Length: 124
Image (cartoon, rainbow, N blue to C red):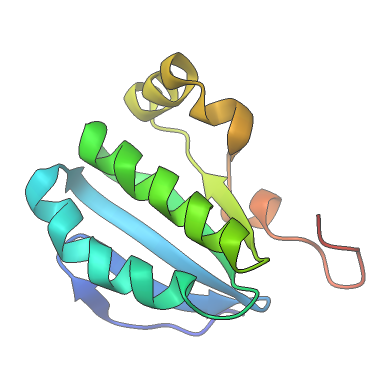
């Protein structure tokens, strides 16, 4: 089971599960909420070899500000030799990910369980 944590902001909850830091985005991800999320995103992506999952399943709206957060997270995680996985089933967010090509760089999984490697399997 994962460790439960209170939301850091109205739009972000962070918790640990299977050795990964889960960033659960919530509500409307726009310019204002992205500004709330950014310091927390930067903190977890600055660690050595971070293992992170960004979960968009509780997102109601997702614009270019949300895309910038995802691109930033991906760049920072790769620069620190880490892993980044994405969970998303929201139709609008999936469409934005496909149209921008980000879904090829960060393939969305339908559930947190699908995004997290099973214990004993090599991480990719």
